[in-house]
Amino acid sequence: ATSAEALASVKGELEDRFGNLPNEAVTLFEVSELRIAARDLGIDGIVQKPSSLEIRFLQNTPLSPARLVQLPQERAGLRFKPGPPFTLIVERQAYESSGPLRYLRDLLGSLH
Image (cartoon, rainbow, N blue to C red; front, side, top):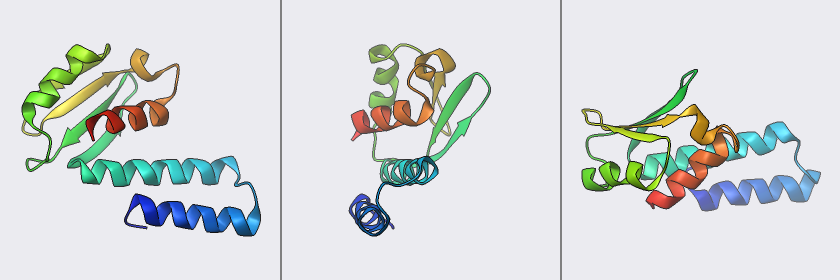
C-alpha cells in the first residue's frame, strides 16, 4: 500500500476475513503507517539507537527549517541538529513510557 487509505483498506479486509489481527500484524501495520507518514514529510530515515531516535530529513522536505528548530521548544527530550541532513534527535526518556512507535506517530502527526 502506498497511501494511508490503501493501507487502511488492506487492514480492514484482513480483519473482515480473519478477525482480530495478532499483535505482530498490528505492529506491522503501525510501522507501515509511519513509513507512509514519514515519506510524506520528507523524512529520509528514522534510526533507533540505544539512547535515542534520530529522524533525518531529506533536503527537499516540505517542512520549513524554522518549524524543525521550533519543535524542540514545544517538546521535552527533543533536539534539532542542523544539516545536512536536518535531524531531530529524540532522547530515550521522551518516548520510553509510550514506546517509540506511539511517540513517533504522535510526533509525525503534529508535523502534518
